[in-house]
View 1 (cartoon, rainbow, N blue to C red):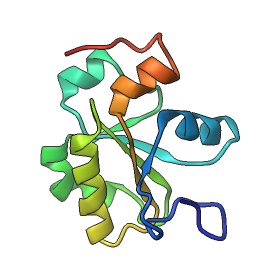
View 2 (view 1 turned 90 degrees about the vertical axis):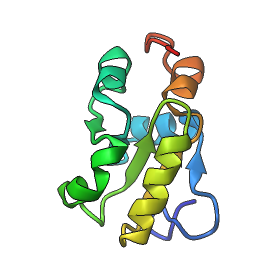
View 3 (view 1 turned 90 degrees about the horizontal axis):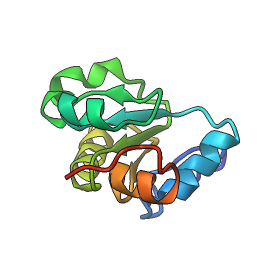
View 4 (view 1 turned 45 degrees about the vertical axis):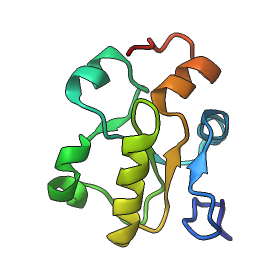
Length: 119
């Protein structure tokens, strides 16, 4: 959901956005951080160019690397770890954070088939 200024908002109950919506916003030039919370080997296998890697297990110690006022899209393989990351960041006062529903798997299937799929 977007707030008054067109930014992501955790308010309103829709914290999951599909890959098509994220891609649309990227294409429109909306500034955002794609936060990849997968493991380094997964990131090396398939990634969204320009994304930032902070594995979920390191997020608590590294959250200060992120700006609480920036739009953040959490990403993992299928959307489960990134959902946990999103909820954690929201609980830490991050106001504009959402989960990419379906993760990199959905991104590859629906937006960019050049991104490799893996198990």
